[in-house]
Length: 238
Ligand SMILES: NC(=O)c1ccc[n+]([C@@H]2O[C@H](COP(=O)([O-])OP(=O)(O)OC[C@H]3O[C@@H](n4cnc5c(N)ncnc54)[C@H](OP(=O)(O)O)[C@@H]3O)[C@@H](O)[C@H]2O)c1
View (tube, rainbow, N blue to C red):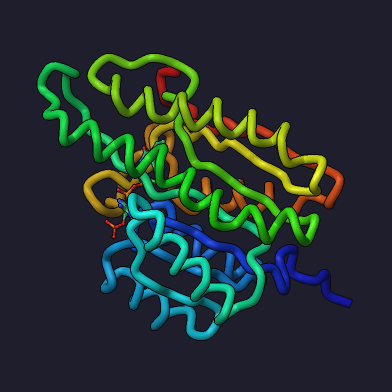
C-alpha cells in the first residue's frame, strides 16, 4: 500500500508565487498532494503555474501591500479550493545599498511588502483558522532576521520585524490550534529573476531545496510545531 502524499487534501496559500522560491514552492506543494492558491502581481508568471499544474492551483493577481487586494485573493481562493489550511507569506523585496542612498519611497516598498504584506495575509486568514481550530502560517523572513548586514539595513529591519511578529503571534494563537513558523533562509539561487544553470549549490541554495524544507514543516503531526527554521548553503559565510 503506497504511503499517502503528506499534504493530500490540504489547501495552501502562497504569496510571491510568480517566480523564485514561491514558484518552486507551488510546484513542490502540488507534488506533495496539496492544492495551492498562488498569488503575485505578475499575471504571466501565475499563468505559467496554471498551465503546468492545472486544477491543483488557483491563481489570482494580488498586491500584498493592499489589504483589500489580499482579502479578495483569500476570498477567491476559498471559493475555488475551500478553507485555507496553511498560508505561506513568501512575497518579499530587497535592495542592497547603503541606507543613505535609499529613497524613502524604496524604504516604504520594503516595509509595505515585507512587513505589512505579512500582516495583511495573517489578518485575512486567521479568523477562519481560529474558527476551525486548525491552521498554519509560515512566514519567510531571512537569516537577516537574526543578524545584521551592511547595505541591507532596511531589508534586515523588515525581516527582524517579521521574526518578532511571528513568535509573538504564535503565543497568541497556538491555544486556538494555529501554528506559526518563521523560516530564515540564507542565500537562494533566485537572484536576478531565476536560476542560473551551473551556479554553485554550496554558495546559493536551489529554491527547490528550501521548498522541500517548507513542505516538511507543513507535514508535521497536528501536535508538533517547528517554530523557526534556519537553512543555509554550507559555503555561505554566516
Ligand atoms: N533570494 C535570497 O537569497 C533570499 C534569502 C533569504 C530570504 N529570502 C526571502 O525569500 C522570499 C522569496 O524571495 P525570492 O528570492 O524568491 O524573490 P524573487 O525571486 O524576487 O520573488 C519575489 C516574489 O515576491 C512577489 N512580490 C513582490 N512584491 C509583491 C507585492 N507587492 N505583492 C505581491 N507579491 C509581490 C514577486 O511577484 P510580483 O513581482 O509578480 O508581484 C515575486 O513572485 C522573500 O521574502 C525574500 O525576502 C530570499
